[in-house]
Amino acid sequence: MVSKQARNLIIAIVAGLAAGVVMNPFYINGTPLLLYFIQFNALVYRGWVPSLITSLVVAPPSSQGVLDVFFNAISVYFVDGLLSVVYTSKQYYATFIATGVFGNLISLLNGSTVASFGASGGIFGLVAGAVSFDYAFNRRVNNFLLLWFLFIFIYSSFAASDIDWLAHAGGSLLGLAIGFVLGSQRRKQYIYGTVYRRYTYP
Image (cartoon, rainbow, N blue to C red; front, side, top):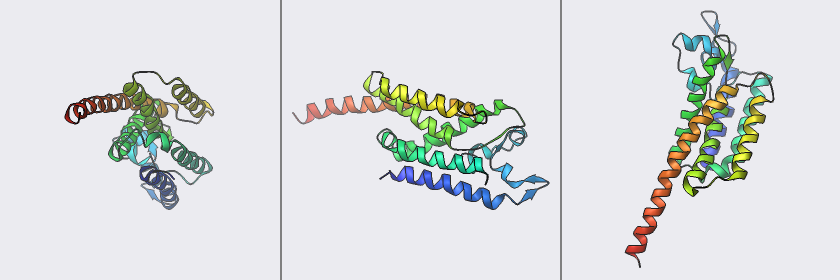
């Protein structure tokens, strides 16, 4: 059984595909409505920034969109056990959105003709945060966790030429920073809490 946070994220990812199906036939001034919700870099360059957020879940009704939704939903399901012990509910959602948006900003380096979508930047941010959280909290490198993360990052980012590896990289970098801060804070709470209880309840 996955956590409430994971269920909500999976529902949002799947609902994003349904939204793409609904929007696909419509146009605004000759531009497909869907391009206002997935990240079409040319529109973002002209100031249309909402797609930096909406493209995290909205997907086009194509084979690529269906596969992206499927693999992202499956990824959230299988990594939830790791994420649920690292983040509170607010931290889970905030980290996903922050790292996903940052990954989308980095993916603007792909150029004005590129359109991209998907939750993977935010998912990589969450997983990368778990890696640095573990290091900050335990003050040691978990080699297995680190190698596992590097493997899925490299495989998922470079297995095909049409994958937005810049979004993965951007989300991961911010996720590492967030995870380190959260892990350091949790370590302080644990140490000071232990000391407090030791002196209060001898």
